[in-house]
Every structure is written in C-alpha cells, then in structure tokens.
Image 1 (cartoon, one colour):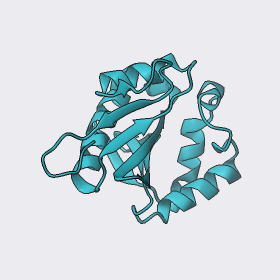
Image 2: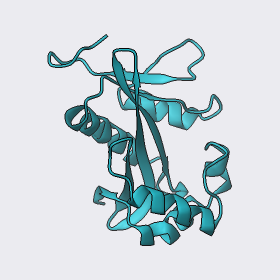
Image 3: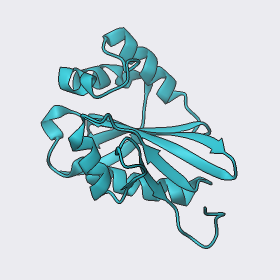
Image 4: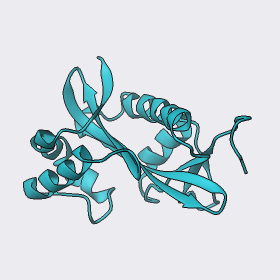
Length: 161
C-alpha cells in the first residue's frame, strides 16, 4: 500500500466526508470538526486555499484514495515557534501503523521546511489510541496527565529551549 500526503483540492470534500463519516472519529475530534457534507465542503475549501503560512494541511492517501488528514497550525510563543498537530484516519485504516508513519514523516518535514522548534498535540484523555500513536512517533508526554504530547527539535541551527 502506497501512502502519500497531498495538498487538498476543493473537489475533495466528498472524499473527506466519506472517510470521516464515523461516530467514533467524531467523538475524538473537537466540536468544530465537520460532520455534514456542507461542513466538509467548507473546511476542504479552506484547506485547498491554504498557503502554508498559518497552517499546513494535507490529505492522507492510500493507493490514491483519501483516507485521512494531517495538519499543523503554526503559532509563535515567546522565543519559540510551535505547531499544533491535528490528524485523523478512516476507521478501515486504523491499527495498521499508517498514522504512526505519517506523523513521523510529517513532523520531520515540518522541522525541515518550517522555522519551528516544537510540535505538540492534544489528544483527548480518553483517546488512548491517539496517545499511543504519538508515543510511537517520538512524542513525549508534556505533563503527568498526558493531555499534551510534545516533540522538540534538537538541532544546532535553531534556538532550542
């Protein structure tokens, strides 16, 4: 199975809807995650018009079919440029190591192409599968409650904290 990450196209909204139309997925996403075809059309249009300056959003494809999404939302904290990671994968493709590989490769790409020092994710406390994927991808719990996971870039050419 060939996994690729591609920029969203506005016409991909039906694929987004079909891949994400799952109550289990919806229970692990924020309230603003689109659940209707119209909502998916709006968010995919936003993704398609993104210029990778405030966010970098990609469709996850398996053998040419959209099966999920991964995104980084950039922000600047005091002396620390960060990206918040958000992701999901269609139910059919969970448990096969795909998301672990995608997150690992995607975070490497973020550190290589964007001026950031830290990537973090905030999976829901009840979402053990997402927490496990982050750990397998090299993230560490940022606090004892395991509500935030971080990966800090450690290279000689950035102002690391």
